[in-house]
Length: 147
Image: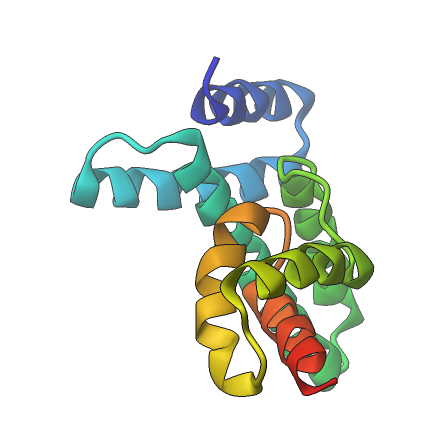
């Protein structure tokens, strides 16, 4: 069963359970998937995971704006939707785990300065795809190359 099929089944269950927040979050992800499929054909599970990550990122950005506006009612909605979507993502790596992987890649590519960050990122990102945000990976790599 593909991840898309799992999302579809979970949406049906959320509708049966009358779980409005779960239903809303899943509908938004499935809509994103459908729009992407119209453009490029059927998506792999990895591509679906990328779309879920984008949806989580959008909601986190919206959460910051909602918090700045002092709208605690909307904050609760965003937090609930983020929790629903994060359940479909693989366990995220922390900075220490990323640093360990980055040290290996830095040694492999022979990187010595921040100028080599691009080479390191190119080799490292496929290893952490879906398990870490690119911004965090970039920061860890830059910190290691500056040290």
